[in-house]
Length: 277
Image: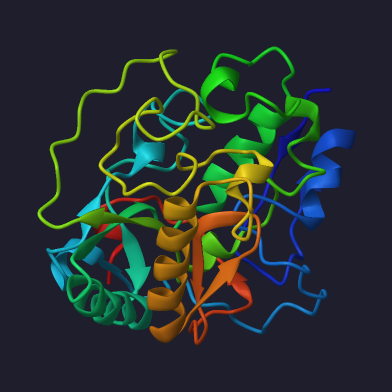
């Protein structure tokens, strides 16, 4: 059943919502959502208009970027609302922490590659509206081949709000150093659950699934993926945990900076260089 969401800068999930039943179920879980959801609390007297975002490439040019939501190669199948430029924006403390993780990753022969960083609230609304439209199934074969679209919210693969909108959460992977060349993506040719070598070769080391694979195989402790993938997931988790980040059990790629400066506030600035500062 179609639904819409209207949301604004908010505190701990107190946001104005108009949703269909499926979207309401999403409110307690989701893509990049920390579990369990935070308890509601009164809004602050004055919320900051800007979270002090920086462009990650300005902080560390060694970290690769593949900002999927600024392109058509994502589960929505088109650029997502709010992604005006293919940039990774993060709060300054999170970006500096990620730089230290990159230092540690290089010692293991790897570079980091980020898929998503700060995510504006309007993008989350876009995800929820897409999820409430059962007719949009063009990307099922690649991103959720074994899970019904109607179950994506209930199973915790999509939801709102998300810690990404607080500016200190990142989706990322490891890439061998030096990084291989990334081929052009061909829509409809791949499935995220295919074995390594048959799914889209996006330069990531073998993590058992592709990014944004809505499937139990993506759960961080899945034993259904191969030994190499489990070792790579553990390495990424160790590097990020040592760097001050906290993972999410259903997505091997998702990490939140533990000491995030805005743990209760969600922002809606677009992803563009002008939002930094």
